[in-house]
Image (cartoon, rainbow, N blue to C red; front, side, top):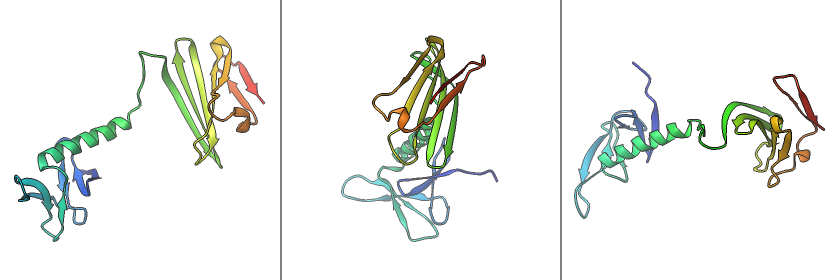
Length: 171
């Protein structure tokens, strides 16, 4: 049997991205929708497992809930997709992350209208503030984001070696 991915949405397990099916969180059996007469029209807003007395209440009728689940799963998939912005400023070429000790460093190499740009993010793990350094070798520019931590508060030394063998360092 092939592996099925299950996702908990509105207290129910759902499987199948194209045709979502509700499953009991305890028994993993398919849940059956049933009508429940509240004041107003009948609604398929309850799901029942045949092996437990538990009723699972969903906030929409079953068709709307399945559409919602499809959208949630699609949004999850899209959130994991890397966006490459070709129309504007730069295209990501490579990314490297290092988490060592109490600090993190992420380097992102992009191709912009002005040439290659290396962006280095660094900071202490668990803290929101970070240092951002921008290196653009073609225009001989080195800058940092003045709205964040100054790089000298994080780095003792920064050295970059480029494809042509050129080395630049800051201490």
